[in-house]
Length: 114
Image (cartoon, rainbow, N blue to C red; front, side):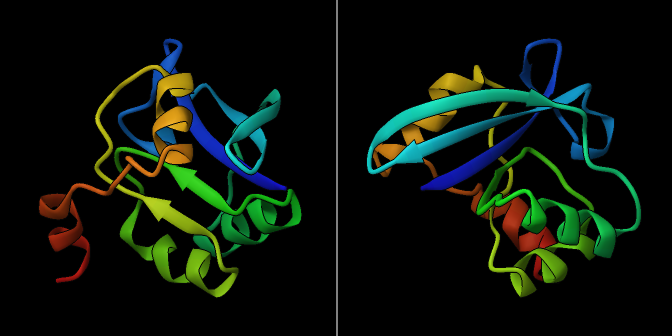
């Protein structure tokens, strides 16, 4: 089972992880959503956030923007991050991921790689 976390603000993908109201966490098996829950956002230092997400079993984070410093910590915990994703309905984003159609925005990725 994979767990996907999406930061939410105003019932849509938050423009920035750090300003989200809550996380919607989807449990998936294969290409099917088998559960969905709402959790308070994980806060703390970048290392603490990555550690907490890992402890929650999160394997994927879908976000528009996240502080660049956290990317390495998430990678250490083998948490895949989709960055630069456009503000959208979270259910649609998960469906795009499950269908293999979700990608990070390469223009935004370029900012993280510099």
